[in-house]
View: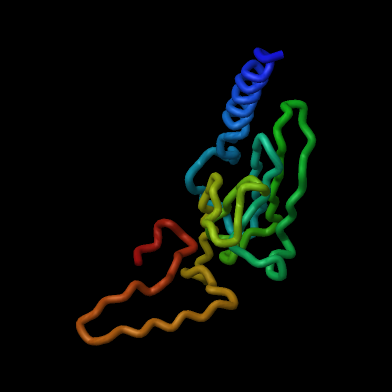
Length: 159
């Protein structure tokens, strides 16, 4: 019986180490596999997120503003979790960063750790992305500089 304790200890350490290695999930994947994509005004587009655990989306609009955004889970035979984000009629307000992330790995204080794609929706009538409900006040003293937050709807727009 004296030898069984070290054996269980070694076995326990091996299993713990193995579970820690297996619990390190690779980042989820997004299709299309691009850093940025230009989407035509009023067209539809979809983004697919694949991961080894449950995944969610963060996108530029609030839930109240996103009546034309649908998110659904898809079944597949790969063993991966798949979530699809679909936009039925793209507008300038859909321009921004779309992030796919694992549900259980995020905390409110941390920046989302996941995969990103930046979507541009060029609109000739809206050169800059609407700021939404957030107002920015920029105060600059003499001889100082400031960065004014502005994002264009078209990556070709000179700023």
